[in-house]
Structure formats: structure tokens, C-alpha cells
Image 1 (spheres, rainbow, N blue to C red):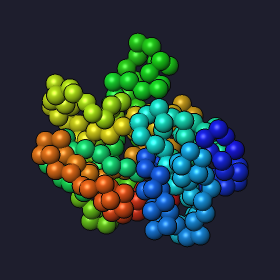
Image 2: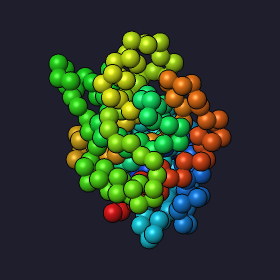
Image 3: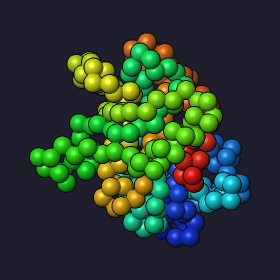
Length: 234
């Protein structure tokens, strides 16, 4: 048991999926896992452990933003021994060819700052996904026929940003989408020698203004979850 995760040591699996929304964790566990058991509800940040195709999986909410994710990922790794951590979440499309409900598999994640920025001082560290997970996720998405994009994303430390100049440069340099957690997850995984990946669904678009309602963001991202699970156990 930790400050933020009330599970017993044997209640957390080595493979953890991390949606930001605790209710997405609940939906994903009830939809995709067998014998899903609630193992954490501290501060309402729900976590469940069950099995998928005979493999133990924990789905633990991480909250919004890199500081919140950093807390849960650190505790999952250092106290519970998590080995594979996959973010499943929503993102905002930035390129014209990226559509609503498309899946994005993040190869790298750029950021201005994260909870780990102070570790590197003058170095601009480039956090990236685990290649084995990345390649397995690409194969899984191709097998499903899901419209998927693979490349760099941007992890922002603010939701209501007012930097059109920054958005312009992200688009100019091929960034596929913006979200708020992956850069810190990739950095923590590198620090502790673990595997990490972000599999995201486009819920809104910065250029077109299209957006899914909140209920769809919570409950209709099945392809993303299936791709993440298949990648974890490929």
C-alpha cells in the first residue's frame, strides 16, 4: 500500500494500462478484463485488476497531467513492481490528415517541461516509447484495420493553452497530436528500466474544432484498449 494506491502488493499486475480518467479505467476493466476486481479507490482514482486472455492486467487511473501521472507511475514501479506501463487516453489532433477517432501510437513525446525536467539540467532529453511495444502495437492496429498514425506527439503541461505560435511550430515539425502525460511516463520508464507506450484516440482536433462529447471520450475507445492489450502480450 502506498499513499495514493491502496492495493496490497499482490493485487497489482506487472502489466498496467493507465487511462487518465478513473471512469475510463472502470469501463475498460468491465469491458475487456475477466474477473476484474477493484483494487484501488483512494481519492477516487480507481484501479482494477483482472485477466485478459489468461494474462493478469491492472488498469489504473492516472489523473490529468504529468504531475499526477508521475505519482501513480512512480508508485506502480517502485512499490508494486510494474514492468509494462501503457497509457490509454485521448488526445487532440494537430495534423490535417489526422481524424477524429483515429488511433495514434506515440513514438516520441516532446514537452516544454515535466516533473523530470530538473533531472537533466541543460540537456533536452528526448523520451521515447519501448520499441518492442511500439512495433507490436503497430502490428495489432494493422491486423484490426484501425486507422492509425505513428510518430511524435506533444505532452503539454496546460490544458487551456494560449500559444498559437507553439501550436504552429508543432504542426510544422510533424507533431501528430497533443496530450498531457506521455512524456513523463516515457521518462520514468527509461529511468527505471521498464517498458512504456502511449496508445491514444483522437477526441478533438485543434485545426478543425471537431470534438467528441465527454461520454464518448469515456466509453467508446475500444480499439485503443485492444491494441494496448495485444501489444503488451505479443
